[in-house]
Picture: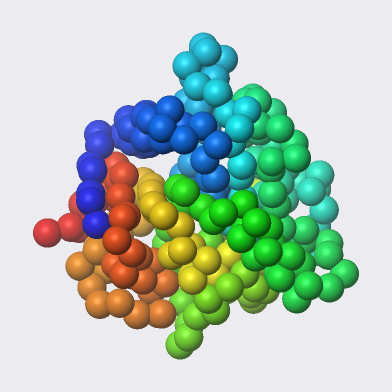
Length: 243
């Protein structure tokens, strides 16, 4: 893992935006794997700014989002599709046909997971997978467990994960869906490059375990140690427990 530490989340976001801009110069038709959540908000704001300033072109980019809640539609408050539309897609020029999302209302969940994996394969795989990390070490919605699914799948969310998402549901954890669809660990690790962002003291312990601990499904992010090209972009608080 290559680790870069910054004075603030905004500074880290600028550095990740630099990486994405450089990648799109080299490969304008890059495939990006994107997360929702609070961590990438400064990054998405920076990418919107650069697009508005004419510094970056997304017209040939294809995106795949990591996850989505089961049981809510794309326009519903709290849905990750709505979040992404508001935070990034409405402010850049990625064609709608090149934006891929899991359908939380799919009548056949298993078929939806197979459809997503097939779409990823048809796109040629992910060039850069952006990730955050949960306070319990999850990436995507791959929760700590004795064993982890490799491919896109449905998952029951742990209480701590539902609590962490309560703000998107009016602060009411009972409104947060109990299950979600997520790319699996194998799908994430198949990306040609992984960039993980983490900010805040709350993430420091799991960042330390991810980098310096053993590889274990009880800390899903630790499996990133097995990937040949991982870059961590951390603020000083998130990096505070690293040796």
